[in-house]
Length: 80
Figure 1 (cartoon, helix red, strand yellow):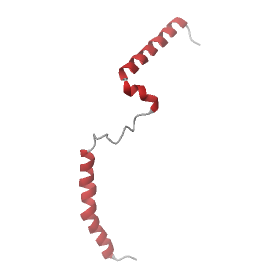
Figure 2 (figure 1 turned 90 degrees about the horizontal axis):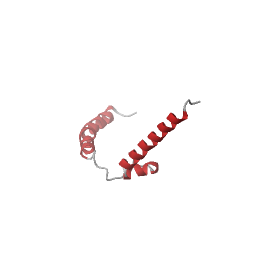
Figure 3 (figure 1 turned 180 degrees about the horizontal axis):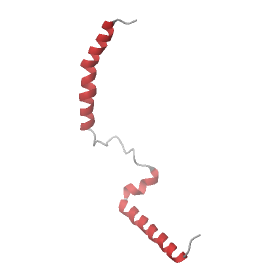
Figure 4 (figure 1 turned 120 degrees about the vertical axis):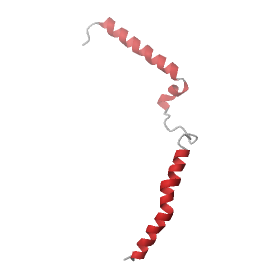
């Protein structure tokens, strides 16, 4: 069984070391580096490669597809 002095020591140790680290240095570091994406592009996936290279072309192609689908519906008459 540990003595009460052992618990008191670790309480004081965490107060002196842990509190400044977790409540001052770590939030300060996170705030300072929140816009730093030099470590990579984690949200980029292979299926969306063309979206990142030319988003306007991708949007134009999507609008063209939407227009062609709506034209098919008008010509086809009653569905189903």
